[in-house]
Amino acid sequence: MALFLDILFLLGGMALILLGANGLTDGSSSVAKRFGISDLVIGLTIVAFGTSAPELMVSLVSSIKGCAQLAIGNVVGSNIFNILMIVGLTAVVMPIKVQKNTITNEIPLVLLSSLALVACASDIVLDGGVGNVIGRGDGILLLLFFTIFMRYTFSIAKSSGEESGEQIKLMPIWKSLLFIVLGLAGLIVGGQLFVDGASGIARSLGVSESVIGLTLVAGGTSLPELATSVVAAVKKKPGIAIGNVIGSNLFNIFLVLGASATVSPLPLGNIGISDMLMLVVSSVLFWAAGWFFKDKTITRIEGAIMVALYVGYIWWLISGC
Image (tube, rainbow, N blue to C red; front, side, top):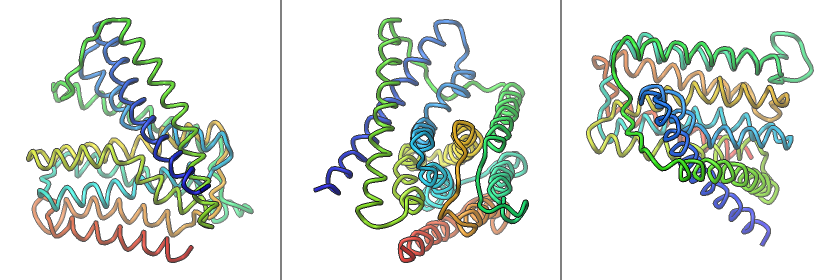
């Protein structure tokens, strides 16, 4: 019975988080539009934040509640899922043509963020510490990286002269404010329920919070990106998946984990170097798949290899429980 309730909490919490993120994004975007802010700026800030809101809320609540392994596992697992499953499945549906600038500039940033996380989480190796902890100093450093990334994003957006692909809906001010309030409420309540449900499932099944964070929580918070990317591939716009994954992965490490560690230091616990290395390997594979084998294209075969690697990683995690 307890496990059934935990599953209900998990599903109900995720539903509230997704609804809350959509409401907050729509309401905030409408208010910003009324103040004359361009669709491009809204898309790069409010909309981008909205797509990362599930990871942010789950990790922040986990950090506050002392469930550090859920917070870290959520980010590490989500980023692995984003690359191997989202890019992989999208490429299986429709091969992805990758622009040269993306291969030389944006994808290396994903690898850099993964390496930065490994460096922040390697206290035992680098400093001879008694345990690996992503501390407040690390969190502040990651947030500084995030500001640099946002500055870079705005600079390339302005130089390209392109507007955001998002169509911002203009709503009455009362409706916008209502969406913002209800969206925030959904995020807060949903985040509490989701973390409580995930922790309860871990206890009921006798597995660590790290495994739940790397698998169930990570997959759940990444479902919006997965749905968006697969639909884009079906509509013959698979390149959207690349931007989706790059933005989500950088937001997850620099903003989500940076904010969570700044609120409260995050001991890694059972999240080991093998999980961090899997993140780095996924990032390298992401870059190599677009650069080599076929001219700047992630093919169906490469996508299938990515999906198989993810399935193997999850099997390895679960079998080790």
